[in-house]
Amino acid sequence: MDELVTKISAATGLAPQKAEQALGIMLNLVKTQGNQNKVAELFAKLPGADALVARHGGDGASSGGLLGMLAGGMMGGPLAAVTKLSAAGLSMDQIKQLGTITLDYAKAKAGDDLVKQVAGSIPGLSGYV
Image (cartoon, rainbow, N blue to C red; front, side):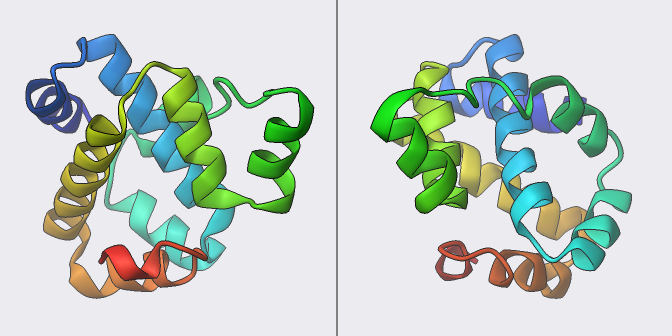
């Protein structure tokens, strides 16, 4: 995961610690919203992914009020992740770069088919692969 964090940091201008936090939030989306069998297969090919989710996946999860309810519950997955990433200080451009770099990395490590299967199991993500 260090290689991926370095790529994200270089492309987005985020400090390495912030890039790691952002990656953990994104991987948490995949882990909590995707088909669990396919996610387990994907994470097995991405050593360190589970550790990042454990360290950073919950950051910013407790947005209170209506926005927190909409992002975390009623609207679910991708919106919740974007809300968490925004709360962590990322711009929309940085969030898009994070997604693109992470998908490219996952495809290189795990193959297009598996990445498409995982993304296809997450409402709102299938159009990005």
